[in-house]
Length: 452
Image 1 (cartoon, rainbow, N blue to C red):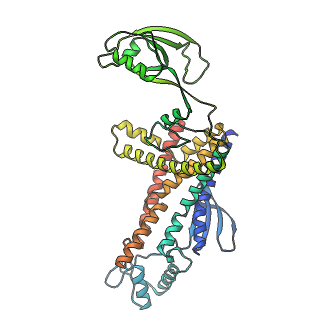
Image 2: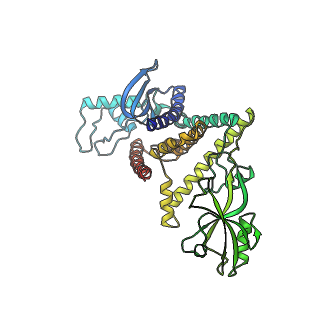
């Protein structure tokens, strides 16, 4: 029963994000009088038609609960692989001219196209020029329709963040992976977390010895807490680091607080302790072979709570910051996959890629953190969708926008599109297949991670 609730919650969250996304396409298409033939939730095959509105738009529910779509009239222009008598391929303009002048038209084998098929082709060419088709609209209107979802996903994230900043909200993560100067309130850097008292830094330092190191051979165990070194009380990480450095190849006496019975103090506060005193001699480089971990704790009473105006301001700034952070993360992952410094770095980068099964698994584990946490993740997923769809890749909205822009500029200068309708269609189909294949690989990776 619990698993069912988890899955249902994830589907609802994704579905609302997708509906908001697709509504941007839908509304702007209506504004520019482009016929919306279908508004579909999830991926076909079609489960059922819900209703048809007065504009003739079908609203459908499909079987695969992963995505959604808005199908516009002649979104992809009709093209034909047909030739003239000299075996030159026709574009739509020359094909229309040939039909009007009753010239012979041939297929790629050299076979003449019969009259009844020419009539069908002529009808499809007329459809391309229909006033309510996407392809008949000016390039700027097509571009706005393609990118209208940007505003909707942006607005959804701002709305969620603003409401939560006004009610109450707390950070969900400490960003110790991506270098940034962004003032993010929900994913602050360690430095920012300390500045706002989200992380409370206490005296003393934990040790985490490396296998077969000086520290381990001297008797230091995981999460030993150093209280004093050579009778000097340790207040912070830097003090202990300096003492070790100053005593290269000299004996240092550590006074340590150690948990009993292998109690993992990194995961619980219910450990019993004993006091231990031991000596250690750093090497000639001032190293003992142990990680030095600050004795910090999360301030569980911390939360944001702003006025109405401040909440809207921070809603905007947090959304902007999360967008920039997502681009930075995407750039970092791409660099580590295609130009890693070590093979392990590539493996770690690939392991961080997760969509959509991994996100569903993450959502299911997030339910225990409460509705506020779910809403924050909801807004961040909306932003991630914004960034992913904006990538200039054919088959994505960003790629369609790029091709529309290039073709409109080249056509104004040279009177002809840079990329033919046929080639553009092939690019979208080819990259769509590539994205589906990539999704399958990522899904497999997600399943393996969940099983492990």
